[in-house]
Image (cartoon, rainbow, N blue to C red):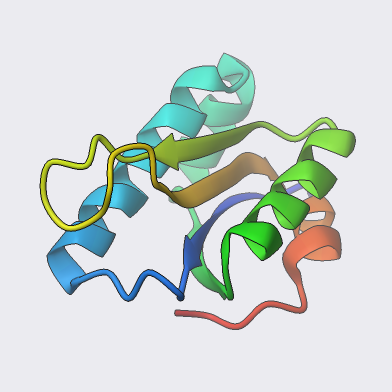
Amino acid sequence: MQEYKQVILVRQDLQLPKGKLAAQVGHACVEAVLRSDKEIVKVWHAEGMKKIVLKVKDIKELKKYMQLAKDADIVTALITDAGKTVVAPGTETCCAIGPSDEEDIDSITGDLKML
């Protein structure tokens, strides 16, 4: 049976405070779901909405994995901060990938470490 999951990639070079990091991850999760196929979201929801937060080194690594997901036709959502608190306006903080087939996502992000 096909299982779905979502991963959220978070830049480690920004050293975001925990609250800011949580908000950015939330933005990414929601934005990716809004962009996703409704039937996939329905199944993913029924399965428990599996999501994993992973670390990337910097913006270059974030965009590398985001592009790999796009090339595989997996929904992505890059979050750009408004800059009202701890980072400069326009800072790209994190990226959600999926929800999509777990095996497809793992083939792209399987080498990354959990946050």
